[in-house]
Structures are given as C-alpha cells and as structure tokens.
Length: 129
Image (cartoon, rainbow, N blue to C red; front, side, top):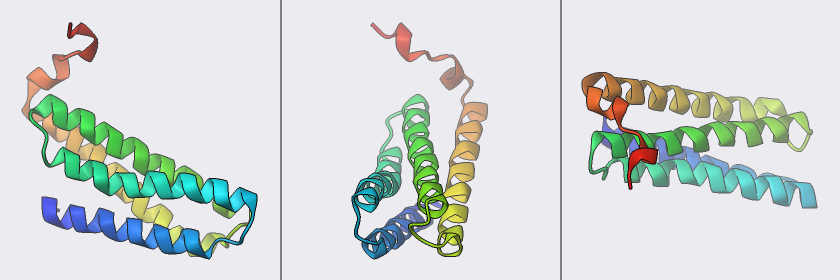
C-alpha cells in the first residue's frame, strides 16, 4: 500500500470512530472511554502523516512506533466498549480488524526499514547527548 492510500485508510478509520463515539450511549463511562478512543484513533492518521515527513530512517521508525502504539491502544478501547456492553461486539468487529491490520502493516514497515538500514538498528536514543 502506498503512502497516499495509507493516509486515506487511517483518515477513514478515524472518521468511522468519530461516528461510533457519537453513537455511544450517554454515560460517564462512555464519555471517558469514548474520549480515549477518539484521541488514540485520530492520532493514528495524524502520526502517520508525521512518518511521511521523517528526516531519517531512525526518525521514521520512532514515528512508526507511535502509530503502532496508538493503533493498538484504539483496539484496546474498542475491546472495552464491546466487553462492557456499551455497544454490540458485532458492530465493533470490523473496526477491530482494521486496527489490527494497521498495526501489523506498521510493524512490517518498521522491520523493512531496519532490514534496509542496518544503522537504524544500532542507534540508541539514550546515547544522544
């Protein structure tokens, strides 16, 4: 999948999550979990755009890690919504699958970048002074 297609995919999932959060039943639990989900899900696309502007392989890997974390976190919040009964699990299954796929693609991208740029494997952020 090329950069533009992945940007569109991450934006589309963010828009789907916005609609889902708006459809949650009104409660303090829905408000808290909905905000968390909204924050992490919209962050996936925003952070992927930052990946596209990375200055180096190491920078790209670091930014991809953020995308990975946010996509995985989004899956967690969706699981909580389903398991708590705030929304039927069937309604969440496609979104969960999509976040799993995005996470897998981002992990694969990180591995490819590392394989093609051995120097990026040895760079350690703690060693920067």
